Length: 257
Length: 277
Image (tube, rainbow over all chains, first blue to last red; front, side, top):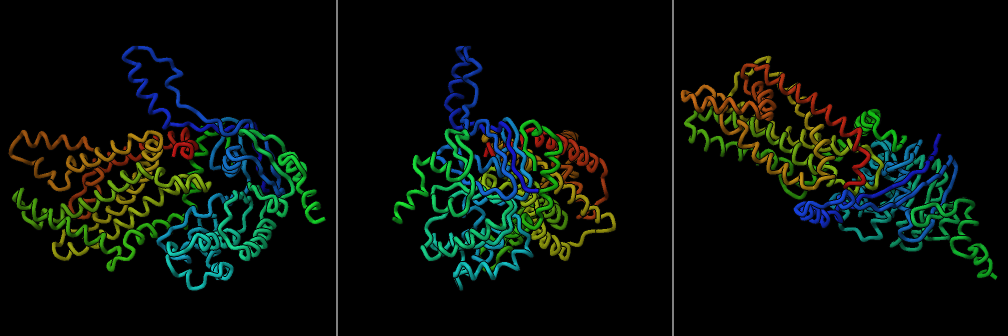
């Protein structure tokens, strides 16, 4: 079964850099013989508070919120990268996180080799990747460039390669952080079909994005994050309407009329 | 996968990390190879440079120290060579181990992989480097044959012990230094110092059997250095010297204690690593 459940999960980041100053203070303070225990504590940023979320198999969840609202941190909590500092998170299923298209890519090695490595990172086996490499190569339309080192690629070409690999896997839990840009429109149209197929294959999806259009095509429900808390959880249209302050479906109707 | 604050402390979590990491052999084995090929990309000789640099260092130091100590070259050179090869593995595991999580920050923050994956990759890469250096050893055997016999096979379990120790050291030092960044330079200095305190260029037994009682006394102090025992368990079989079991005993005890401490640390701090890096 594929499922994610969090109970009162919080994520607090210790900020050690900020302490260097107070460490000096602590040493200086020691001479005076007066340091309270508070001064010594590492400053903490509370990124997520009391997150209670259950996502079941088949759910297609959009994640919306302003910059710094905790979307990316929430995705990392749901993927198991961050264990909650308090509360609990249970993740059942194989997680394929797509947060940064560049991670695990090596500029010095060829496109083909990068396809293999990126696939292995996403939990595929060598065999699975070998059987898919041709299909990925076709999709990327990079041709002979695939034998070239990745550093010779333009940004758009890298995105094509990364999207080609990502959309070829069979994830149980697909966590997507918006990082799709710098691709030409025709390619994006093609990627969109593949993304939709990928989402259909996935057991469940959580998609953080600022693009209404993408969210409406791929998601059915939504979570609105604000200041590290879940502000609203519910049907996609209801949440988007509350978040935007207007109904995006009506906008469409208006613009078509 | 269950991630709970209250179960962070469970042994099961630490064990699971090690087992799940081991299962992703395909990934870390591939990356380990990649690391080596990467280092010598675009060089004509490629990874053979590893072998060549080792040969140059060992031969040069062999000739130098054979002269300085007045030892015959056929004794000094094999000793230094094998010592150097083993030292390269040990110091590689410690130095890169202290950096293992910091260096993989991007991967750790983007992929929910067991942290042990990065450590297995490191130990595997060091093993491959070691294998490259064994070529120098093989050439040396042809020029200066050593009295190898069946007990030389002990070099295999000895290397296995070295690798098992490399793993706990990298895990423990990696976790500690991702939290306390001052540890990294400290480890660097200590490792460099240890090189001089360990019988690699100087022959331990010569000093131990020295006519001068003060020197013999001093030489006995070298036993306090744990690295001496690690070097001895593998260098002795590789040079066809008789087995000294107390070195093995020391290594086995350190291995058990080291892993016990590492498992305890993993139990408590494994899930903190993504926060610290």
